[in-house]
Amino acid sequence: MHIPDGFIDTPVAVAAGVVAAGGVALALAKADQDDLQDRAAMTGLVAAFVFAAQMLNFPVAGGTSGHLLGGLLAAVLVGPWLGSLALTVVLVVQALLFADGGVSALGLNIVNMAFVPAFVGYGLFRLARLVLPRSRPGVLAATAAAAFASVVLAALAFTVEYALGGNGVEPASTVGAAMVGVHVLIGIGEAVLTTLTVGAVLASRPDLVFGARDLHGKPALAGAGP
Amino acid sequence: MTATRRRIGGFVAVGLLVALVLAFAVSRFASSEPDGLEKVAADQGIDTGATDHALADGPFADYSTKGVDDPGQGKGIAGVVGVVVTFAIAGGVAFVVTRRTPADRPAS
Image (cartoon, rainbow over the protein chains, first blue to last red):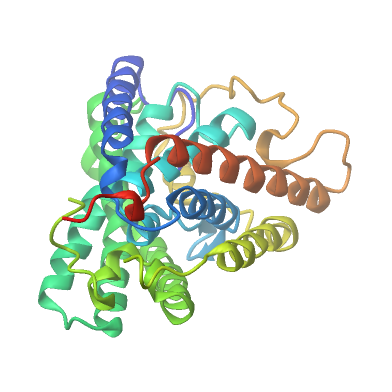
């Protein structure tokens, strides 16, 4: 879902760049609120894992592929502030070193793939946890639902950007319907991969899952973190 | 927190190893079909304004490695570089912005 240069016109791309820069500045200032141990190593690991996973396109219907976006995964593992920073690093490295995602579209891609999943997606995770049992299966069910939603939300964010500044003649409603249609399928893959990964960490080191801190004697979900 | 704090060196090492194996060895088997956005853009003709990437001549552009002819191998090498670089930068950023560890905080 990396937007190349020239898909979205310059004013909207620049506006997204301003929003992304503001978001990164806020995340840098608030990162200390993501209260977990060994945050540097964990944030680096999450970024490295998401980078690797994003290389692994899996086929979905109709000659199309998708890959893990990983923003919701990052937020569940290290918190939304550090998680959005990890995704931002991945996207910057992809744009500058691997020519993946336009340099002029970097702000758009950071909004869609770092902030929407790590904040809107993580907010849905928190909401889902409120209504689900306070247990590992509850955490995993919330993870699956929010991971799926995060991909559809990212597709909708692109649709909004297209409506505001897309270089195309198709109406945004048509583009949006197509984007949501294919990303519902990719979102299922996102849910499966994210749930497997969070499940693996919960099985080996449950104390390292930020979004499940309350299962391990921390009075979490209250206090630190949004 | 301090009482239950466990070392994570082994966990991070295993996690990095998994990422390196995925990036080096598994990436060559990934689907090369267009992704969801690329497919929609081509189908709907909204990619007409797209321009070449400004850094398309870089040494690892498009997940290949300049000077490595085998595309699978080139992708794998590019993947290893990406894993190392993202780990270092993201870890470095997090280190700088979160210098206080939870254990350093005054008890509340």
